[in-house]
Figure 1 (cartoon, rainbow over the protein chains, first blue to last red):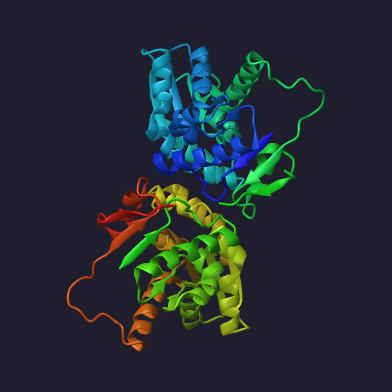
Figure 2 (cartoon, each protein chain N blue to C red; figure 1 turned 180 degrees about the horizontal axis):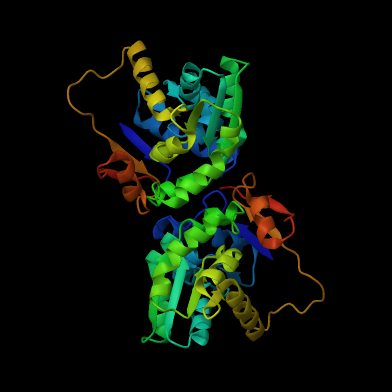
Length: 235
Length: 235
């Protein structure tokens, strides 16, 4: 597996759709030239604004996180009221609303951008009072709307599952789009007959546009082991 | 005045020195080709890691924010204990410590990175409880060290002056490096005999590497008027 992290430009969540699209297309074309059997756009912002451009330019299947997350939310909701939280650009793109309404036009969707969550997570403050207060502030309109399902529409947010779950209560289902896209990728590769059937763990390489920043520290929080094989890619 | 905002890559505060240096040199060479009489690196992170590279490459005077801020702190302190707050990269660079100790090796400097301040400010939450709690958390080691002067080592932080002042108390002087560099620029231009002597206000153009993002909204908080003349620069 090649993990490509555009650390020189992150975060994408506050950038314009045109910039995110340009960067994502460049990086995927770069990976395409190195050979790959499938691409997963494991970023909600990039999925929200760049997926169509990417599919038009690449010959391999390209999966985003929006559609799998929306389908999982639809499977889980009982009252048809779904909350979506994400970065400023993901929420402004209305990608989840569109995907959900395409599945069922009757759904009531309440979306909220949560720009403090990413820095709180990257600071390791997910159990701090700051995380609770920020989460209560951001989730208020979702609770008021009576949602029974909330899509964590940013790959960072599952690290805040604890505090989000406590504020929303046990009756609200939290959709982790990462899990949804993992299952979708497995299904897609199986369908195409290109799923790896080997024993043991695969290998991961980390291609970064800036290897000098906080990536190793932040990656440790997600992977629960230090990432090796960091490869600097020219920005 | 040309304001150049690298909005496609911001924030710089979490990137590696090599990346910040590369971007800053590229942008200044671009501005140099358009003609300018003086460059101000109005970003603490870029000043901290890129100033020497820039001075070696440009023929016009290049001013950073670190040295003027350090000199102002030295003028203000009575007990020789100075606090510095800034982004992760600025603090990791130790640029303020070095500048201060070069002025006076006896100074006791306590530095602290405050990665939540920029997103809090960009969200307009400077009067929110979240800002107070984050500030108390970050300032604790400075208060414990008995500092009587604190350098706001990030161009965003003066917007949090209210909450910082309340937590530090009236006996602690807050150095705004923006004011310090403004005075230094005026002095430098006067010395070189190239200070504009016209009546009325100057004109400002805004060159941005991404005009589509939140710049107009955030700029409004700083300028207290909407910025016009936004010009998209190719990233």
